[in-house]
Length: 519
Ligand code: XMP
Image (cartoon, rainbow, N blue to C red; front, side):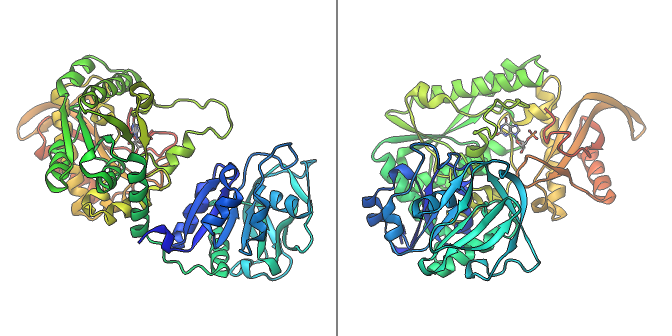
């Protein structure tokens, strides 16, 4: 099954930060869509693509600026439904004979409320109360609608918040129905694809086929290398690319000695033995731990690990003859986060490490097959690819590994203790059936030793902190409200089973003000 057997929706991208969210809403409705930048959408392209419906995205330009983006005129003659969003609405009005004006106090940024004018099939399920919350982000506004259009909703600063030419099936909204701040926005897309006649037969299985075909075409007969971390993203990317190009993919698993108990063996066994991937297990524990010896500053630790990671990866990659592509498990949120909304530099709270910069240095091109997906979609794709459920549901694990869960100096002894304590804690969470409710849980070993008494003897061992948070994206987080029984039982188990720890604390800091990791 490939995309050509599906009804296709075309999203013409005018450069909005949130265009991908439109695609996401459509995928949730099992509708096949493709995003194409407006420059590429020519008459010939439209004929070949043959969309069943078209959406114009938002965008940062002003339709009054010379040379501002436009769709080809022929799009209006296709006879298919068109939905224009924000800039897409303005450009639609401009092209069809309406008028757009600059701000003059009518700009709207943020939450706004739209009230209905009259009934419209696009708005089915809307206005069950007297108004709908929407997200606006516009400087210009439509001052005169195009002939044939009527108004179906207004907001204080957008008298033409919702307009439509029902006869031609053209719809235009000033707000962004794709973002969460338009709580009922998904319903608009649902109505739009229903009235366009989509059957909703596009599934994650179909996405997989499509992604495989794209990878095959891009990579051809060249070699691909991939830094496999054992995390969900790089694992799903590797599995997908392996399905597409088989042995042309070689994965490098960098073992920096900062992994969890049995983690390296589990990852290598799964990929090498069960999935038949070519995996190089780069055993570089000595190198990393040697360089980290005596270092206690968190940023210095991160920088050392990040730099060594790149050096090591490059060393192994250089041994792979003919490597032309670097695979990365970049997700859509990484793509948007890397673009600063304000256009200005943002403060670095922690320097995250990745293999950015490597491709240019090594003359590699990128394959990023997960660029359009969100985390939950990556998990669905992973299931589709047959990765074990226990693996797909794993909590995130940071690139610098246990180094940032060991505040102060890192020693092998501390790492050993930390691994054991973490394993007991996670075992407890799984036994109590709480693992999937929690975004991330781990132990941090603290740089203090405290006095205790066990049996008749005095102990002087490390204290540790348990961390467990709920979150949707790791950007903000709440501590998980374990019961006292759970915490008591876990503390007892850790102290009994892990030599070297005699005190257990629970971290009840949310993010912000704390971060999830301790460093
Ligand atoms: P913080 O500690 O900043 O963490 O609240 C947010 C999420 O990011 C993970 N994290 C990292 N992931 N490389 C990564 O791949 C890193 O350097 C890194 N630092 C933090 C953290 O585990 C949490 O999920």
